[in-house]
Structure formats: structure tokens, C-alpha cells
Image 1 (cartoon, rainbow, N blue to C red):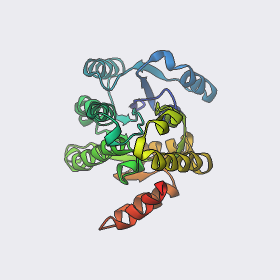
Image 2: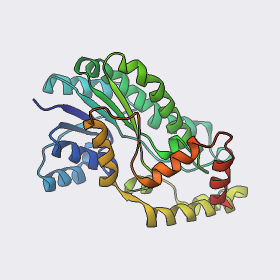
Image 3: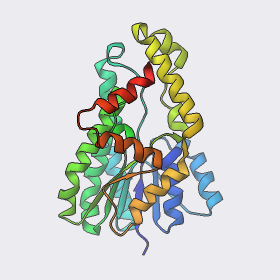
Image 4: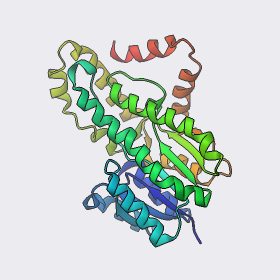
Length: 278
């Protein structure tokens, strides 16, 4: 019997690529997304790869949706061996120019959504000796200008999972985080910001924001890896005999995260990211 993996946020990007890769590797793959009407690209990718996916609705911010989906998967497939928390949403902004509710919403999707899915899945992963894999970001290690709320959410996920990992291991569940850097996917387009309007309304922060956006566009245009390449690391977390807790998806991501982990007083990172908005 093949192992069953549930992946969230599979309408595009890393989630879509990871779903196809997992199915190709022999997993029974439950590919979930908030809006099933956005599954056309997922279905097309599965058809082109010659694999079958079990596509279901799951809204990570809706407790009833999470409970219903996971219960349905276990009822239909008899088990749950792995979960990949991939669903999330980008956000660009800075504290003075946005509301506290804006920040709360970013946390709701990117942090509490992960917690909600993980909590619902853990009893089943404990029963199967399974794996909990969460796609975070290099932004979960390195704070980045105009990404305060997004990085806060990803930092929270990293701290939560790093703390959970030894506890979960004591009952047979492996916990890992996957840290992508720049990935060429719809995620960037889905940040939901009208860039010209954002700069025009940024007030005193306009010069810094314009510099940041210019640098970010150039970096994604020249150095972003493909979502398929990033998904290879997700698959490694699902299939390695003893996966590491923290896995980066590229050499660039490894260098970026490594610089932070070696920067005891924070001065190196501040000098580096400060240059993005100079």
C-alpha cells in the first residue's frame, strides 16, 4: 500500500510542483487548495506527468474545513503518512502604513493555518509514524525590509516547528521545515500589491520602498529557481531515511540562511538588508 501525503496550497508554485513530484514518486497524493475552481493548472500538470491526484478543498484558516478534509482523507484512504504545509500568502508593507488587523491577517494565513492543519493531522501521523513538513522561507530566518508581518509569521512557524520537533520525535513523528529563497512562481504576483500605488501612498517610506521593489524584481528575474527545483527538496524531506530538521532549496538559500545563523550580534544582516533600501 502506498503512503498517503496531504499537501496544502497546490493551485500553483511549489505546492503544485510538490504534489506532482510526490505522486510521481509513488505517494497517494491528496492535493488541497482553498478554491477548487483554481485547480485547472494542477490537473493539467498531473495529466502531463501521467499521475493521479486526489484533489480536495481545504481552507487552512477555516477549522471546519481542515477537520472535514483530514477526516475525509483518513476515511477514504485508511491512513495519513505525511503532511506538507505549503499554503501561504505573501505580503509587502510596513508598520506605520498598515493596520494591526492587516498584520493579524498575515499571521492567520501563514502561521495559524499551519498550526491548525498540523494539530488536526498529528494524531494520524503519530499512528503511522509519519512526517510533518512545512514550507517556510529564508524569510523565516532573515528579517527583510517591508516584509515585517510576513517574516514575523514565518519566524513564528520556524520557532513553533523547531520546538515541536523533539516532542513529535518522541512519539515517532518527523518534523522538518523547507526554506526556499526566490522562486519563480505565482506567489510573487499573488502578494496583491499595486506597486505604483504602494509607492505613491508610502509617504516618507517611498524612496526605500521603491529601492526595495526594484531590487526584488531584478533578483526574481535573474536568480529565482523554478518551483520544480524547490519541490525536489520537499520530496527529499518526504523520502529521506532521516531528513534534517532544516532544509534549504538552493545554494543561494543556504548562503542566505547561513549568514544569519553565524551572525551573533545581527550587524552583518542589518548591513546586508539595509543595502536593499539605500
